[in-house]
Amino acid sequence: MEAIIIEIVNKFGYLGIILLIAIENIFPPIPSEVILTFGGFATIISEITVLGTVIAATIGSITGAILLYYIGRILNEERINKVIDSKLGRILGLKKDDIHKAFTWFDKRGKSAVFIGRFIPIVRSLVSIPAGMAKMAITPFLLLTTVGSLIWNTVLISLGRIAGASWARIAEYIGGYSDIIFGLFIIVFILGILTSYIKKTGFIKLIKIRKNKKQITSEK
Image (cartoon, rainbow, N blue to C red; front, side):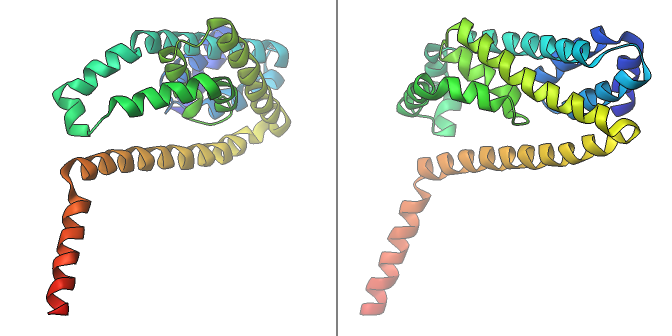
């Protein structure tokens, strides 16, 4: 993956950076830290500039974010409620109240989530979907996405330029941070499914009944 990213940046310059960052926003496992830090190093060994690289990366970030935002608009609350009423929704133990609470929370905290999310791997991409689902106004969404992405891209590109030939070390450190975040995201997702399943099957209630039976038996 790293070799492909380097080849694309070397061959297509700014256009390659725009394309790669846009794809990275849609498919989070693609390492933006490699794209951006190498982009910073490339400003030393090629004709591309730091300013041009930051602008290109930010355009790519906005492009990917807008696509995910409109996917979120398609997946509105009404459509999600249909999923909840389906067999899959019942299996997962999804509730309309929980979804409504999530939308209400995003209405209140959505702007902060969109801005801060741009600095967190994985979340940086995924936060655009609930923004669209909650029908967040496109103007503040674009403004917050642009500012947040601009800061993130500037920092990583600058670090890549400062590190020079050692840019890969910076990418490795940030990649480790991204892996931890991704791992935590998967764990939370799995725990959420398990919790919903346990509540649905009444497993906890069954354990309490067995404990009560044991206590009654021991008292006798």
